[in-house]
Length: 81
Image (cartoon, rainbow, N blue to C red; front, top):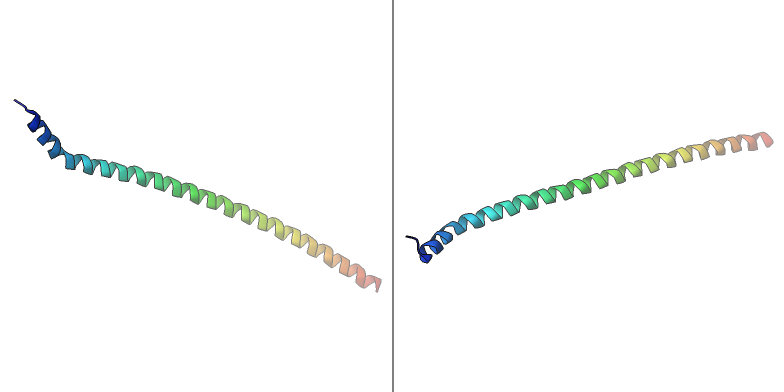
């Protein structure tokens, strides 16, 4: 026959297992959440880098256009002299 003391003893005997299992589950959940956050940050950083490269290409195109216009202006000025 079970008594309250036996039930408490069994509960305390299982307590280390329950605590260990809880810590492991918590660690796994925390690790997964951490990995998801890191992945999201990496994707955001990649998008920022892509946007930066796109902007730099646009700037280079504009600089090339301005350089072409400047060369044509210099040619016109040389012809005027």
